[in-house]
Amino acid sequence: MDAIVVKGGNVLRGSITIAGAKNSCLALMPAALLSDQPLTLSNAPRLSDIRTMARLLQTIGVEVQEMDDGRVLSMSAHQLTQVRADYEIVRKMRASILVLGPLLAREGNAVVSLPGGCAIGARPVDLHLHALEKLGAKIELSDGYVHATVNSSSLRGTTVSFPSRSVGATENIMLAAVLAKGGTKIENAACEPEITDLADCLRKMGARIAGDGTPTIEIEGTDSLNGATHITIPDRIETGTYMLAAAITGGELTLRNARVDLLPAFCEKLDAAGVQIDSGDGTINVRNRRERLKAVDVATQPYPGFPTDLQAQFMAAMSLAEGTSRLDERIFENRFMHAPELARMGADIQISGGSARVHGVKSLRGAPVMATDIRASVSLILAGLAAHGETTVSRVYHLDRGYERIEDKLAACGGDIRRIN
Ligand code: UD1
Image 1 (cartoon, rainbow, N blue to C red):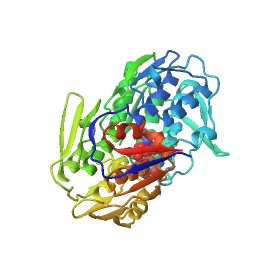
Image 2: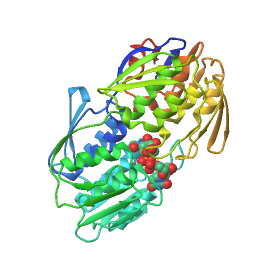
Image 3: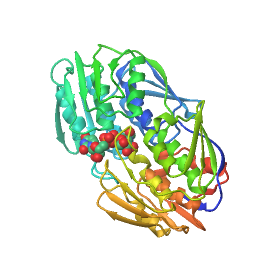
């Protein structure tokens, strides 16, 4: 199995091009199921999660064509061959559940494996299922699968009021409601930029959607949707990760194809920690104003709050900051698995429930480490870039799910980082 070896101490300088947003693309791709005409997505990231979604769509009968070395995906759901998403694929990636809404809307039935637990908490899909039931689906769970059918001729628009915000559940309902009869109002909808990106794409396909980016989304169902071409937004989590790579090494990076407006709370915290952020014309320039970062407190929140997907990377930076910071994880339980690994590198972190107290230390030492999810893995790479000595991060398949050629991007900016087999 591959591992990444990082020798710390090099200051990163240079520019990095940010890929398209993985989480956007994973919601945009199932939109292809809604039309018999092709959906073409450009600025797709070349990641194993995207290949997994492509494979899943292919098993359902979607023709997937890759162009420009995988950066452009053309998907044609002219004729579906089955309405089933098998456990073998769904277990690899929870976002597979996003085929449920569009399959139900187009075909009137779907059989999708339950994703099961995952490394960052129980992560149920109850919100997805209850909302689809409100749209008129009959849902049964058996043998680890969701069996969903529509009794009448099609799903029926209604008001769906989520008890708590969920990005995936909001996307699934949008993907179903666009082909439902009548209007659907989604209350307490997620406001993440990936939701707006999905709404933009669906509008190009002929859907009638308003209010995306706010907690109330209104959708007027249509009988059919057409094909479209759409450019995926830049990945805000990859952007934030490389901003922290510049900050933790005391270097200077220019990020291209990046949007600072997608990271409001994160940029505020980074600024408070002493990082200078300048942006314009699709680029972001990052460098430190201080010799050593300053400790700042962070609580993860739904958008526009501080993203949970940047909490681990921020913790790596705070482990070397001056002072003590408190990091509260409010989206997922059990999302501090990186803390004991950072501690093995010399970080001083105390965890109590959903809170971490990070007492900044002057230096970290390289160590063999491993992590159990994408963001935890990358936080260890960031720590390794700043540590004395060598860090080996194993279980690299997590990184490959969410970061395109991370070792090449960092090495091109002076990082001593390589992949070994
Ligand atoms: C998406 C992102 C993920 C990010 C997360 C939160 C994708 C592919 N993944 O995940 O990177 O960390 O948003 O920003 O876009 N919940 C329930 N029941 C449900 C659904 C969710 O209880 O039916 C809970 C979850 O366990 C979690 C919270 O709601 O505690 C938010 O999860 P959600 O927004 O749904 O995350 P995902 O869409 O899975």
